[in-house]
Every structure is written in C-alpha cells, then in structure tokens.
Length: 429
Ligand code: LLP
Image (tube, rainbow, N blue to C red; front, side, top):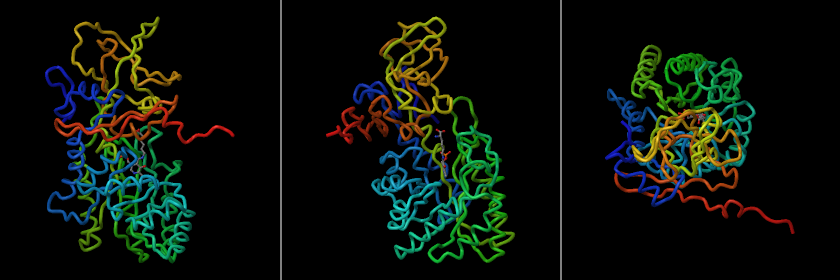
C-alpha cells in the first residue's frame, strides 16, 4: 500500500496534502509517513512471531544509516526495534531518541577507540567485528575499562548479492568482514582473548536485493560455520543475517519480507531440530531500506523550465546534495506532480536537475511531465539514504524534514540556515 496517493487530484502524504506542507515548511522538504514506517516494521515483527515463535528469539535492529532522524528512531523504538549503528554519532542519536543500548549492535570496518569506549560504557548488545586488528583493539579497550565486549564476527560469505557494485558487500574483494576461510581461525583467537565474549556471527551481503536466494545461500554458509565452531566447543547465541531486502523504485518486484523470513526460519528450525535438539538460536536482522525507503518522499518546487536544442530541463530547488542516489548510483526515483494535472501546461520530456554546478547534478532523466514553473514535484522512495547522505555542497542548507501522522504534520528537522553552515569556521587572525 502506498501512503502517498492522489486524493481529489492532489498528492497527499496519508491525509495531508503535500501542497499544504510546501506552503507551511517550504521546499525542498523530506516528508515521511508514520503509518508507512509502522507497517514496514510490522512486516518484520509479524514474521518474527508467526506460528507462535517466541519473540525473545528474534531481534530486528533497524539500520540507522538509512534514515537517522530522531523522530524516525523514536517511532521504531516505540515499536520495539533495536538498532544497527556504524558510528558513535549514531549511538548518540539512538540514545537521544530513547533507544535501549542493550538492543544496539555496532557494525563497521573502522571503529575508533573513542567509539568503542562510548559503546562499551553504554553496554551495547554486540560489536560486529570486521577484522583481527579490530578484535585486538576491542579486547584492549574493554580491558582498560574493566569490561567485557560481546562480539560477533562479520563473516564475508563470498556470495554474489546481484545488486549494484557500490552496494554489494559480501564478495571477497569487498572491504567488509572477515573472509569465510579465515573465520574459524579468527573465532579461535577471539575465544582466547580475556575481555571478549564470543556471542554471535553476522553477515550482510548487500543492499537492494530483490531475490532472497543469495541471502539463503549466505545463511547456509553461516550455518556450516556455526556447526564447525560448535565442534570446537565455541557455542554461539545469535545469528545476524544483516539487512538488504530491496524495495520497488520503478517496477522491481522484491521478495516480500514475510516470505523471506518464513523461508529463513524454516531452514534454521530444521537445522536446529536436526542438530541441536531444537534449542533455538536468536536470529537478528539489520533492515534499513525495506523499512524506511518507501516511507518518504522529497518535495521540491520547479524554479525554471529550460528548453534546449537536444534536451529540456526542469530546474528544481532540490539537488544532488539533497538526494545523492541518482548522481552516485544512477539510481531511478519516480517523480510525481503534486497537482495531478496542470491544465495550463503541455507535456514535454525533461531532465529534472538541481541548481548545483555539476553536470552530475540530476535527479531524474527523460521524464514526460506536463508542468509549469512553481509546480511542486515529489521524488518517490526517498526515505532511505536520502537525508542521511545529504551534504552542504554549494553551501546549501540541508532540507527540512517532516513526519506526517494522518492529518497532522510534525516538523522533525528544521531547514538548515546557510549562516549556520559556516558557524564553525574562523577567519585567520
Ligand atoms: N547492515 C549493514 C552492515 C549494512 O552495511 C547495511 C547497509 C545495512 C545493514 C542496511 O541495509 P539495507 O536493509 O538498507 O539494504 N547508500 C546506498 C545503500 C548503502 C547500503 C549500506 N549498507 C543506497 O542509497 O542505495
């Protein structure tokens, strides 16, 4: 179901017209639907409890990097989500949103000592360790603090996720995780370190996966490792299969979350019954895009229409600094006019571009639109990796963010004032 739909010819977020939001908060503005967030999260939560599965044996850790606005984290926290973080900054966000640090897992290849200290001081659930040097550093830092660090090793199962090369992470030439062949040796090392508790295993093979076959392939490889570890008396308590389920941007048909989790649990249950007398293993997930991607749009206003020799351009007030995905991955985002029809405009093919001084500053190419200057456009599927990847390039303040809840609109991030962008800078004496 879409939470952004036309009612009486006007595009709405839930029951709120986007034109009202533009009037009230200006453009560009990210608009999120609270109901969409809740619905997408419940696809995971429901599948985790289907068939009477004990909720204590699963944990969904929303991947904060996909959209880290405090209100988004707050909504997910209230729904019972844990959090997958990749920096100390993201941990501070989770705490500020009321999140429980005992439901936080910390991924990433470059954790600094300060970040480890911060995470240890809040007793996070687990560090997803990505290398041997990181393991030793974590052991040291935990020792200095008189603490023990719970870890899982991020294993790189060398499975092709069949997604964009920039967002594929599970192949052996990716920088992520510990190579599958080295994993056993790393676990043996970890098990001997005095300030490390080996608690789990994790992998994340990529993002925007449409099919769950590679994920189930990765699962099989992880299961094999868990068995090998058990035979060496290293017993794990959780298995974290990462995130990665894709969404529909255009006409993609991603696997449904419930169907994927069903297949995954079936394999895990069969394996646990066969080899471990049915003793469950906690299963964790790190979804980002599939929760927040289609819960948000980017609202922008057309500034100019330029008719050129070979192309027409609709210049809008959003740009690559606001929505980086087209410039970075040639990503496709749907474009909708906020007024379903503009009777005064004729239809043309446009590239929709921003005002930034780069030819790469385009948001959509070759779209048929009947629009006039001043019309509002909505870029669809912009809830994930939209605002979190925004920058201040060209000294552009980042967009405002609002959350719609029925016919209520809450400002959840003010538009950045340009003057604030250089407030941390100083002139030479
Ligand atoms: N866990 C780990 C360790 C990750 O690296 C990621 C995403 C996730 C979970 C969440 O994956 P998701 O469920 O959202 O697919 N900027 C790119 C996407 C980068 C993904 C990075 N890692 C984009 O805009 O498509």
